[in-house]
Structures are given as structure tokens and as C-alpha cells.
Amino acid sequence: ANKVGCSLPSARKTGTTICGIVFKGGVVLGADTRATEGMVVADKNCSKIHYISPNIYCCGAGTAADTEMTTQLISSNLELHALSTGRLPRVATANRMLKQMLFRYQGYIGAALVLGGIDCNGPHLYSIYPHGSTDKLPYVTMGSGSLAAMAVFEDRYKPDMEEEEAKQLVRDAIAAGIFNDLGSGSNIDLCVISKSKVDYLRPHDEANKKGVRTGDYKYKRGTTGVLTKVVAPLDLEVVEETIQTMDTS
Amino acid sequence: MAATASMMQSFGPNLSAQNDLVPDWTRTEVSTGTTIMAVEYDGGVVIGADSRTTTGAYIANRVTDKLTPIHDRIFCCRSGSAADTQAIADVVAYQLGFHSIELDEPPLVETAAHLFKASCYRYREELTAGILVAGWDRRRGGQVYCVPIGGMLVRQPVSVGGSGSTYIYGFMDSNYKPSMSKEQCLELTATALTLAMERDGSSGGVVRLASISEDGVERRVILGNQLPKISTH
Image (cartoon, rainbow over the protein chains, first blue to last red):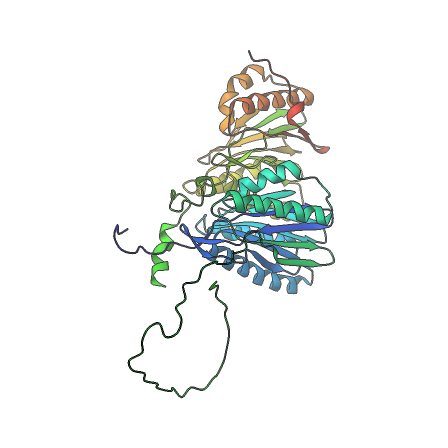
């Protein structure tokens, strides 16, 4: 690495707090929304809860590209598998596909996942580590903020909670990660998966709204004197117009 | 982007604090620190394990089940890398299930042990797995086979494994007697595991026990407050 000048950007990681719990009617998954590149926030509102199948979702911590691509690959294979079996996919199947792929890559795919969903055998929750080990538990946390979130879970988790209580607990666990871990921040996303419906709540809680600037550095038109003005119109045909908003506040 | 290509090789599970925001223990591999034990008795085997899985200094799972069924009457106790042992156990369970269907007969414990040995020895450079294979079959009754790191295979009447095992070799050698009953074996295992969990930082949580015989598998859990009391000054 060169000591002077600009260094190459490091791989974008989701510093992250992700977690999940099993409650009375299903599972609740939660995640923060900060993606970091070294010590800089690369994305203030990224989505860390990935779709696997209509009844299964997966939170991802670690290298952002790895979690995105891994979950998409398994989602695709699982859809084909479901068409082959003629059945709704099971969480255990997704777990096995993910762990076998990650083990094959011996930890070089930096994806730490919280996999949750509901199937014919009830609600299930798994934590999956980059080297390919998995744990099946009633509540799990992953990412740099996992210790903060786990502290909240170990204090307040009870089996068979109601949906609202479960959502509040997950929200509080992610908030603990956001406020006590530098690698996590911004908003709290939730995903409530139950037999009848899936609530993808993005954002569920905007815990870090940007403040309103009190001062203004804009210069009024006419501050700089204009000497000459040349206008050259370009003959363009509008083929497609898309708008991507940028935070300029 | 050309820059990304060079980044890929630098990222790896053993790279130290490149990113200050992501603490060390998120990068360390998950390990079942562990104490595991298996004892033969006349008519079956008793197996036991602690329940702690660690990533560095953090306990990733405090209620792990390290006693993994391979077949109806054959279990394995896993120690070492969680990923490696889970993967090996899945492979062996598949191979043994297939073999059993081919034979149309329950498989032998010796067969299961040899399958473990085959994987652990062939990939010995890449794996960190210490496994105890224990079960019951019609030919030889209760059997315990030890497959430590490196892929050796040896049958022993009683065996311990994992990082916590070093603390209980003396206890095991002095307290194990041949022709013990099932209850005595369960008591011996529970006490041995408790002693190891007391001294080894990588072992802890609850004690999981199982007894395997012709009649089936009986599992039980001993919670922290129910562990046998050991007097220390």
C-alpha cells in the first residue's frame, strides 16, 4: 500500500447488525441499513434483508457483494427446486444449499447470514457462518453489532411472543447495534414472516433522520460577473428517462 | 473495476484488522472448543458433550448439540471446526444411509467409523476435526471409535476429545472400570464433562447426554444449575 496519495478502495462491507427471532406465529428478521467501505459510509440506506422465496428471507452481514450474490444464487436454485418438487420450499433446504456452497469456498465468500422463514413444519431460524457452519436457534444475531443485539435478546426474549412484542424486541436489538456499534447505523428494516403474510417493513424505524441545515452557502445569481456567453444546442432524442434521487440536503 | 480484482485475494478468513469497524471475532472461524466423551457398556454406549461454540472469545451458540445422529443407532461427537465437522457428518450420514439401503440392514458402527476415517484422513491437511463415533449394532453391541485430528482410527472402551479433554484424562483413567452399568456410565460422563467445563474456557453451557442401545436412543440435558456439585477449595 502506498503511503502517499489515494489508496485503492477496500471491499465494501456491511459492518452491520442483523438478527432474527422465532415468535408465536412465525419469524421476525431485522437489520440496520449502513454499508461501509473502510471507515466511510458507502451507502446510508442499503437493503440487507434479501428475498429467498415467498416464505423465506435472509439477512446478510459481511462482504456486501458476497451476501447479495449468494442469496440470489440460492434463491434462483430454490425456485427451480420448488418447481421440480411441486412444493413450497423448506427453510432447511435453503440452509443446506447455503452451507454446502459456503463450505466449498472455505470461508473466502464472506457471507454471514441469518436465514428465517416458515414452512409446512413451522417457523425456523438459522445462523450461517462464512465457513459453512450453521446453528438452528430460537434467536440469533450476526455482524459487528451482534454483541449489542444479543445483549438485548438475552435480557428480554421469551418463547411464543406475540407479533407486536416480537417486532418491538427486534427493533430494540437492532437499535442497540446502531447506537453502540460504529459499523452499524441509519434505519431499522424489519421483515415479519408468518403463515398468511409477509410484511417487508422498509424502513420500519428511521432512527437516524438527517437534520435540517440552518445555514446556506449558496451564492446569488449575479455575484460573479459574466464576460461572454456562448450557447450550443445539442440535437438529442430522448430515448429513456430515469430519475435517481440523491441526498443533497 | 480493476481495483476489485486485486482486493479479492487479500480478503480471507485470517486477515487481521484491515477494517477497524469489524472486530476480530467476526473474522475467526467458528470452533466447537469442546469437551466430548463416549463410554461403552454391556448392551450399548453412553455419549456426552458440552454445548459451547465459540468464534474467538465470543460464544456464538451456548446451547449447541454436538451429538449428531448419523443413523438410527449410530451417533458422532464433534470437536474442532464447526463447519468442517458439520460437513463431514452430513457426508457420512448420506454415505451410510445409502449403504444401509443397499444392504437392507442396519449399518455397523465400524462401517460408520471407517467412513469418517476415510474423509478425515484423505483431507487431513484441509480439515480440523476430532470425532468420536459411537453406537450399537447387532454384531458387536456397543462400540466407541476415536477419529482424532489426522485421521487415525482406533476402537477404545472409553474415549474423550476436544480442548477440555486434557483436564479429565486422569479422572477418566482412575474412575473407569470395565463392566459398568448404563447408570454408572451416565454418571461418570456427566461428572467428567462438568469437571472439564469448569476448567476449560472453550467448554461450557449445558451437558448433553445420550445412551444408545438395541432399544433405541435416550437423550437428556443437564442444565447449569443441575450439574453435579464438585467441591473446590
